[in-house]
Length: 131
Image (cartoon, rainbow, N blue to C red):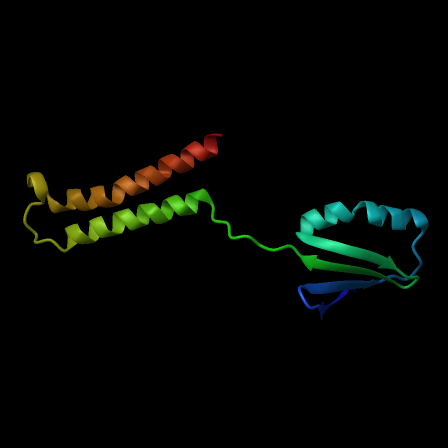
């Protein structure tokens, strides 16, 4: 069973993953382990410094790659739609129950304030799924 513990260095944190094995690895297995290093780095989003093998253990030293801030475009559009729709809806809800602008009922304007951003969001999602 692997044991994960950390060793702190001056600039970054280096982690060591140690796995016990019950027999020594053959040279072919060690070479296969070295060949899969880029795949392991990609899948785990880490930078592997070295892989050491002993007759009873495999030790992998690595540091995590820095995580950059990422927000999907759909979330950004949803946030903009909410930022536009909520103030419009609030303004019309807080108005007197008299007819709204242009003589149309107030519920029409509330629905419009909520519907336009939601329709825009649905359209963007539909367009991104089509590609």
